[in-house]
Image 1 (cartoon, rainbow, N blue to C red):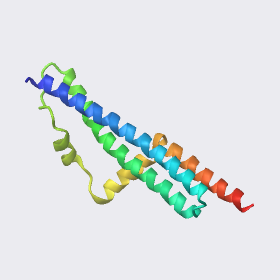
Image 2: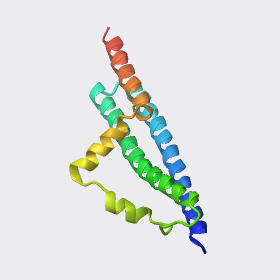
Image 3: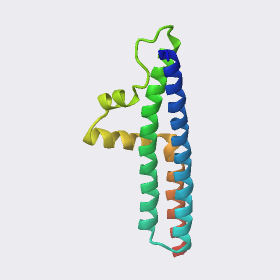
Image 4: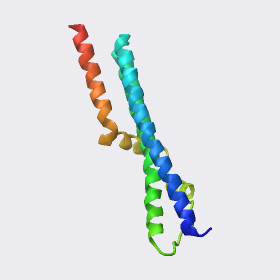
Length: 140
């Protein structure tokens, strides 16, 4: 197989994984809504319900961090496919990821940064606000 064909296969695989991460992020959002509704219905203390929401939010941030790594490689593969004769061999996702993977605190910062992106944070902040309003109304 020539390298352009290999790059094409790599692109397809990465794209499928990228989309699967997006689906997983949506499932996390739906699970968060279900957990929140269950917490409100069972009158679970606000602290525990909010903790579940925050846990879901951070988990989605981790998925989005993985997804951004795939997106970086997708962009690189696309630029290599654009060239007539790619200079890089195909299927280098993990080699590039390992070479550029942050460690320790930097990795945690990357997860938090992904969690703070508006498309990730959007459902969680309103859910937390609704929890607070729901609990406040129940005290009245």
